[in-house]
Amino acid sequence: MDSKQFRKAATSAIDEIANYYDTIADRRVLSEVEPGYLKKLLPSGPPQEGEAWADIQKDIETKIVPGLTHWQSPKFMAFFPASSSFPAMLADMYSAAFTAPAFNWICSPAVTELETVVMDWLVKLINLPDCYLSTTHGGGVIQGSASEAIVTVMVAARDKYLRETTAGLTGLELEDAIAHKRSRIVALGSEAAHSSTQKAAQICGVRYRSVSITKADNFAMTGANLEKVLEECKAQGLEPFYLTTTMGTTNTCAVDDFATITEVLSRHAPPNVAGEVWVHVDAAYAGAALVCLEYQHLTATFDQFHSFDFNMHKWLLTNFDASCLFVRKRKDLIEALSISPTYLRNEFSERGLVTDYRDWQIPLGRRFRSLKIWFVLRSYGVKGMQEHIRKHVKWGEDFAKMIDSRKDLFHIITGPNYALTVFNVVSKADCKNEQDRLTKDVYELVNKRGDIYITSTVVSGTYAIRVVSSNPLAEEKYIRRAFEILVEATEEVRDGKVA
Ligand code: PLP
Image 1 (cartoon, rainbow, N blue to C red):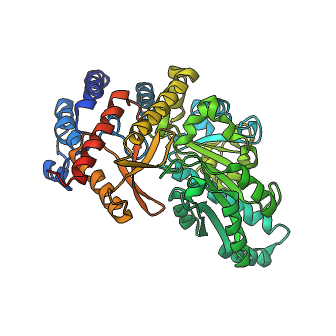
Image 2 (cartoon, rainbow, N blue to C red):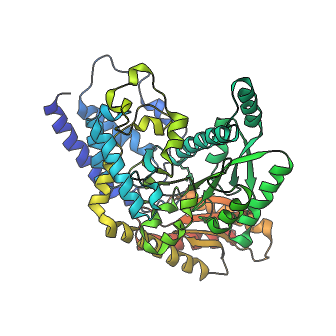
Image 3 (cartoon, protein in one colour):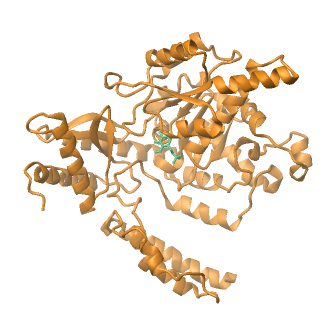
């Protein structure tokens, strides 16, 4: 394809994408294909001769779109949203055009420098303490996902802990001490922390313990429950070195009690003392709400924590992937992840004049992801982003009120929290097993019909439905319709009238 053909092909692709967005609400949100559908539609190998763009493009609508679940549909109310916006799509086009695995500053200075600028903008936008700014000892780096961010900081935390607690030892004595400590160190998260913390512990080869949560505490981790686990670890000769706290847990969007957690840690593993526990804030979804002043008090203790991550690709209008990780001390990342083989050396890095983001992440190469954050911040502005969050929060409240207005059918388990409502179906006999069965049947019926897409979960042993009103294309009428669909399905299931 030459540039003339590209111009024509790109114009028609953009037309098709714009049409897709214009008609997305009319499409069934959940794909109905059977597993293996695509293999049957495609040839068994690539064509010998290159094909015309028009022939390739035709297959998008006929072969690919039927197998898509339309995450951008306003009827998609499942999981957490995966944002998209036209400015971010434009940025991804430029990023693809300028393709470079820009691991070092010299590989493409603009890629590194724009990232530093937008990450500092974000620190100010979401009210992180100044210690996370690149102009102090901290800084931000874009990762592919919140899970990747957790593995990255856990590696840094592990190495920092081992380094600090074996300081002064050398030679074999040092090797033995590190080997012993490696077998004793523990990563912690709450029962509601995303599974990526446990997975990161698996990858890092360290133990994992979880802190219990209760309905009485709104499913959030508290200092008191953390303290119990710290004491248990101590009694077993284990050494906690890392903790994931969450702002907006996956199941219920609970926010951990940062103040009591800080207080407990200050007694058990005082901050800034060798052997302190690295505290990471996983705000993958709800962190986006920090663009609004009314949530910014939540960052009050973050100057005592070590890292914070949120996904702009979840709730802040930016296409996947844009997970924004901030650390208080960039040297902790660099000391754990820096490598300098001769082929990566250059005078700018050697003289310490520049940032090389390869030392802040696990992979070497990286895409030009800051471009889409820059386009989004400039296209929407602070006010646009605040409006985006506030309208979704308001629709979450409206939806929860509707659910609450039918106490004969539904019971709200928690929420609305950050546009997420978690509820179950009540049974006439007030029997838990029956409620679980009804809730599951309603959930399955609604998704089978495919007018909206929702997810289910189990909260403290109770089967529940989650409805999220923060899709980028959400509208009040679709939220209202979701409520009607749920009422219809529940009445049918309860009365045994499912067709
Ligand atoms: N943390 C929380 C609180 C989440 O809800 C999720 C996913 O929904 C993740 C982490 C994992 O996100 P990612 O897919 O970016 O790894």
